[in-house]
Image (cartoon, rainbow, N blue to C red):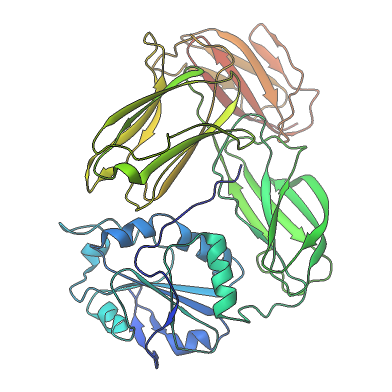
Length: 471
């Protein structure tokens, strides 16, 4: 399911033209020289993020991931229309500060920044001197062919930034009238029974009415769809592959073709998703310890249809108070918990040590599902409720051996400390394969060669084993 990141305006609330003649050259921490004039003259838009390694609002904006997503979709690994540069404008900036070392350093900027960084040895301060700023952070956009940067607001959605890009740079793309692109949906957790989803985006200048979109794994096409619709430029639509059930650990590849486009960069998208954790019960409790951020925090619980089934009460939370909420949820269902703080920083640690925990309501279980504290503006976590409540899992994982693997057909299953209660076998499509265990032996000889997954349930745990059938 789609989770959208929401942001607040940090420093600037409108657009204003910055200083002119920003024809700067600086050396990044990678040793490369970056010339703003040369980059914009290649036809790329340049986005310059001027921040400081010690700036809390800068870090809060940074960890939202909006810049990383822009770079992923439109940078060298995407459509290659956008060039992003992070600038640490502090004149005293060092490599250690950017690595998160130092009393005032907010975090490891280098580890979390996939695009070029300019900062140490006065390079960042020299770049900053070219811009008119009201404070950190400040974001400037340079349109293709122009070194004149325009300041844009930091507080925007990813979709909102695309609209700003189109407004500030009337012709940011020159890739033809028909140009299909695939976006990453950003959903990294899924529940049993969910299907792969990719986002079809129209980067062309004319409406897109048809395309072929397919999903593959390990070089095998799992499903191909003939999409039809009417997508205007800079709009998108999610495409779901209903015939495929998601499996954890599989690298899915999505591909789109139109048959008539020339510029095919960005037509492929990859995703490896994580199985959402299973809750210890379907009666759950949310513990919420707030700090001085009080009214800035809100939360909601969504079901599989993205309908809100529980949420924070209207009004203002009290400073530093502790709250508890109990949810009576449906068994065998998928839910997503979303918590956000409109000023960033999560609920820890600038104004105190706040946190949230989700656990079983039943005292005998008192099992912890997940929790958090420092999440920037928003955190979204999915989970699946069990079919039956009241079965406490042991802390240790059952030791189950599956051999031989790879196999030509017959597999021996051996459980060291807990008997196997039941099992299921799935193929790459997520379809359940009929199978039986006789004398601790599973026979897959009737199945074609390929990758299969055994889901084994014991009294202590549920585990999944990957099996390579090669006949």
